[in-house]
Length: 72
Image 1 (cartoon, rainbow, N blue to C red):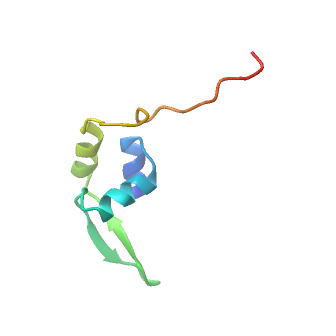
Image 2: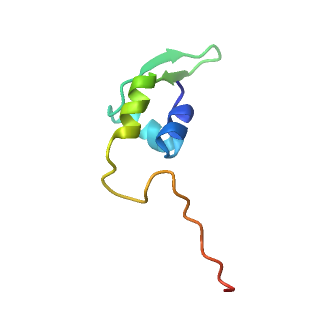
């Protein structure tokens, strides 16, 4: 799975998933892309582990930070 697909399952941003990959907090494999560069592959089991991992801080995963209507 790509970091984008994992972020949709976990309920956070893709950049947070990539940041945790760089920190070594997510098990992944890295493969070369045909045009240069690379991409990350994450297993479904690892995505499920992240989804079930308790959140320690911040806004609850998957909830919008909608701004209340100021005219009311």
